[in-house]
Image (tube, rainbow, N blue to C red):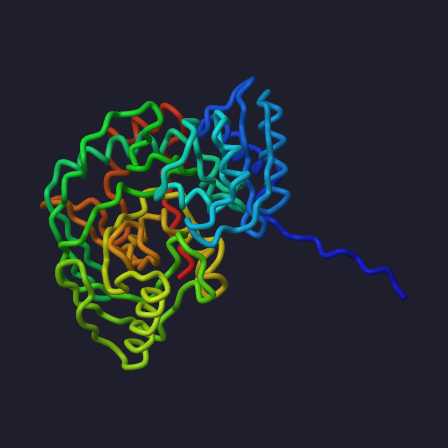
Length: 372
């Protein structure tokens, strides 16, 4: 019997690129330096072992004291892994290559250390420009954009498939600014920064075009999401879907899934509680919805060509997300997203802010590949 040669995986990016992405995550995103105690929490199947190894190696090379844990997926906030929760309590920094990070938006937990969710868990995402552009570039963009959005009192989202969704902006409760604030409205850091602050939409009205429902990362489901056979146009009244237009099979499939997940979680399946939009022009699709609906949305939600709305349940982020492609989004009478382009990225002031950290032409290059 002849020798069987191993299949070599072809990558777009080099090991040098991946290590550069890892250092950007660790140094610029997580502030790791000599002596920092860092926990790296890995989820099998989410982070590739070679990527996890490189992140660990680069953290040790920086002089950090590194602890590594591998833990299986978490079915929901009701079943948190005790050892992992205890470990992160005492660490200065926790790097999540794990979906547990999403649950920490919803539950109180001990420990005051910096916590960072890494979206770049494959070789070609951590090696990409998305991961290698200096972390503080998007921090500057969000700290420029955030106050402009917050100064408006209403919003409207439209899209080529017929979305016309609008409402008033509820003022968020006042909170003290923290040194770890990145401008995206989250207490948990993400790497890279890639979405606008969420907007509550329990009083929204209008029409919403629906092609997919994708998991929000709160609970695991045997049926994690759906792609509809054709788009459905939902009528929204006071934050709730009340009617549907479209092919009979698509409408029936949408209703079936909303009601099924609603019943499994004891939530109203027809509520849309909040939304936000992608802001990072370097975000790109590494898979298509047909290949993996979950993996596609996990990555692509940060591209400006995608806005997504949180549905099923009144508490954000709900159980599912509804992606909207190529949105035009106005706050007040000002257009911030125009057919999937974040227009403020062309502002000279933004380019000047970005230039402190990275070549603006490279950092703000718009990757339009969203996998559809």
